[in-house]
Every structure is written in C-alpha cells, then in structure tokens.
Amino acid sequence: MNMQSVANIDVEMEGGSAARLRQNLEVLGGVQPDLAARLGQAGFHENLQVREDEKGTRRVGRPFRRRWLAIEETEEELSRPAPFVQRQGGAGWFLLGLGTGERARALLSELPDDETLTVWEPDPALMLLALSRWNVSGELMAGRLRLLLGSDLVGQGPHNPARWIHHPKLAPTWPWVVRLVAEEPQRDRPLVAIMEGELLVEDLSLALHGQGRPVYHVDATVLTRDQIADELGRLAPERILSINFQPELAHIAGELEIPYVPWEIDPSASTIPVIAADSPAAQWTRIRTWRRRRVTELANRGWPRAKWLPLAVSPRHRQSAPSPREDLRDHVIFVGSCMASQGRVLWAMLEDAVASDWGRASAWRAFGAAVTELESRILDAPTVFDPLAVLDALRKQFELPEAVPTPHGEALVAILAGERLASAKRIGVLRALGEFELAVFGEEDWAQVLPAGAYRGWAGHGSALNAIYSAPGIHIDVNRIYQPDIVTLRTFEITACGGFLVAEETDEIHELFDVGRELATWKTTGQLIERVREALENPELRRAVGDAGKHRLLRDHTVERRLQSLMD
Image (cartoon, rainbow, N blue to C red; front, side, top):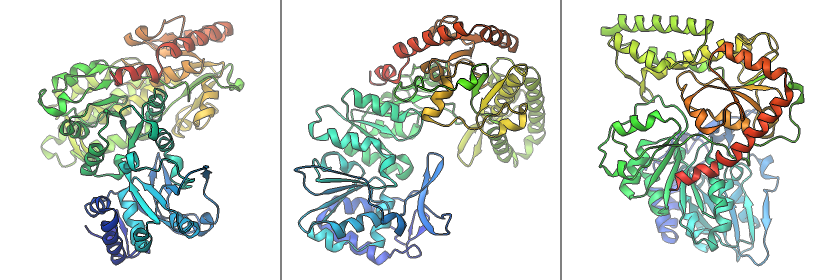
C-alpha cells in the first residue's frame, strides 16, 4: 500500500503521517485483525480531493450528487454540537460517519472512560486518511474506540447505543443507515443490497423498507472492483439491485451466485457487452429495462433474462402539492433539459475520438455534414421519429464503426450524435408553441433559444417541483428524440401530482394509461397546438383528466408496484 498518497491526497501535505498510519494499522491488527487486513489491502478511489473553500481554507471533500461536499470540518463547525439521539438504557456512543476524523476525536475527549465510541465509515480511503492524521493506538488498545468499515455495520453494528451521533456532513447522505440499524436487532428477512446512486435509489430503498426488508447501500464510487465483490460477499444479500445495468456487477454477482437485478431507466452510450448466455454472469442477471426493444437487443448479446419494466415514481416524493403554482394556470408548462450543452459535449467527444482516424476523415466529415443538415430540419419542423435508426443508417452508408473509443470506454456513434438532434427537437417543439404563454424550467440554455420571458429558471426539487407539476396549466412532455417509444419519467411525475398532461404519442402509453381520459397525447406539433387550445378553453376537462391520471398512477405505476418485478 502506498501510504504517501491516498486518493489524490498527499498524506504528509494534508496533516497526516505515513508512520502514524503504519502504527495505527499495527495496533488495529491486534484488536480488529480483519479490518486491519482490509485496510492494508485497500485500493484508493479518485473522488477524494482537496479544494479551497470560500475563505481559502483547504478542505477534503468529494463530489456528491452534482455538488461538492466538503467532508473535513473547520474549527468553527466542530464547535457546534453534532445532532444526536439519547437513548435510555443503552451503552456506548455510536458516530455515523468518521470522515477525516475531527468529530470522532472531539467526541473521544468527552466520552466517559468506561464507555466505547463506535464509528462507522463506508469509505476505506477516508478511514486511512483519518488514521494517518490521528494517533488512536491507545484508544484502540483500551477499547475506547471501535471502527466499523462498510458491511461491518451489519451484524457488528451497535444494537442500543446510549447516544447515536450524526456526522454533520456525512450522516444526512445516508438515511438508509438509520433504517437499517434501527431494524437490525429484530431482522428476520434476508438483506437486499442496492447500489448507491441518484434517481429512484432512495425510492426503491424506502419501498423495500416498507415491506420489512433490510437494505444496505453499496457506494461503488468509493470502492474498487475487488472491494465491491468483498462487500457483497460479506453481506450475502438475497439479491443485488441497481439503477441501470452495470456489466461488471453482473460478473461479480455470477462469481458470488447472487441474483443481480438492474433496472435500466436511462440510455447508455456504451455498447451492450456480448456474453455467453450460459455464463454465470448471464445466468445470475435478470435485467429489467424501461425500453421494450432492449429486451431483444439484450437477448441477442447473451443476456436472456431481460424483461420490460416501465418507469414509475414514489408517491412519497412526487404528490399533489398543498399550494400548487396558481400563477401558471393559463400557461403551457415544460420541465426538462434543453440538452444543448450536453449535445455539444458529446459531439466534441465524438470529434476527439475520430480525430486520428485519418483513413476515414472524409467519411467522418460527410457524416458530420449530414447530422448538421438533419439537426436544421428538426429545428424547423420537429416530428416524432427514431433518429438512432437514421444515424445508424448514415454510419453504415459512410462505412463508419458502430462505436468509438472515449476516455469513458467505447461509446455508440449514434448516441454521441443523437443528443444534438434531441436538443433540436425539444427546442423546435417549444418554439412552435409561441402563440401561448410558456413556462419552461431547466438549465439556462433555454434562455438563449426561447422567446423572452419563457424561461423561468430551475424547477428545484421536492416540494418546489411538486408545486409546478400540480399547477392547473397545461403540462407537455417532449421525449428525447432517440427514445420515441418509451413512456417518460416526466409522464409519471406529472400524473402523480394530478397535472393535466399532453404526452408524446407512443404505443406503450396506451398500455399504461387510458388516453383521452387519464391524459392527452400528441404526435405532431399541429396536434399539440390543437390539444393546448382545447385544454385552455376547458379548465374542468383539465381537472377531470388530471384526477383520473393520478388515480391510475397510484393504482398501477408506483415504485412499490414495480418492486414486485424486481423481487420476483
């Protein structure tokens, strides 16, 4: 193990010591040998970084859900008590989150001599960094400090601590831990492991908890491949769930003989890996995909246990707002990405990938010109079609490869080019609605392409987004152009809030909703304009359709209902 460098952080420069880390690990080997061995073999991830805060103070942190999370606490922050729960009849203290160690060190100075402070941390790199900064050999030998890493929480976690303390920076990111430890002593059902992530992960976790199933979240962003396999082996879960398919996780599940059930909800730029259908990875993986056509594609590449599973929402998070946005009553409302910036990023990635392909330089230029022409046509006359098929035909016409190498692995040419067309379609559709009062929420790119006043800023999350989706105006949905066959997440979110929705026409939407009674649909911009005019003249219709759509959503399209397929 290289003790000088922990995940892009120079230990000596950041207040640590390689000698101190060695000493702590030696003592730890005598009292918690398994943990010492795991830390001694730990591989370090790349997410831990040091940045200066607004006051110029260097602090350790990492990206977390599209923002920067400063983990290291300042003296001022340490002076404020951490949130805690006091329990009668308990023993010892439990700190949820070690971080870089400052909070645990302060708590040890307050801890009664005959008590133990148990500290849990899922990130081995953070634990190593803390042990390089702080000599805890005496506390470890005396039994005043006990460290838990990752899956140690299950089985070894405190059953009834006298004081449960939350690390102010880290604990709020782990609501599932409170649920798991609270139920662990009386747990009689097999555990489910879910890979940490953003969209729908917490909804699935809560739904499983509601069924009385204990859930452990594995954060792949802080673990190496071997550490993930080790964690899952120790947890021995009933099954492994993830949002979106992770091929390497399929191989781990096959090695461990644990069912792996990913739920695909997003398009991927990567090609589906080809595998032998009778391999352990394929046999232990049961993919659920939001896109029906993917079932055949997956089977053709050796993944036979795939099924169609449409998207859904949790009524815990997406529900009618007590105070809907009444100011949007007579507006046409759209919430979503403009995708212009992302389109430019992916196109630049494609250009970089083919820059050295001198033998096909003229073919790539011709392909680029064809995409630009198609983009212009879509902007002027947006319509519903499958551009991936068109782009794939263009690629074959110019004898270009299906995928190209990128810094993130191989990526499909059609996906890298398709985002430009997706952006053009959304912009074109909203521009076609210029006769109406528009209220468009999303990133600032919208302000550059829509009439003045149409862009209303970010929609926000939680209650702010519910208030928009509950507004009595006319909500529209515009699918990403390269997935015209799906029912989008936005469809389920708006109907969950009781909003009147004009969704894009697909075959699948007729299977999931009663079109005309529970929502309206459009296929051309002319139809969309007609639907909007009709709805503006009939607020009672809007209310009735919104109510019916919400009833159908709550009956058939919640995360709890989808969980039946994931756990089947």
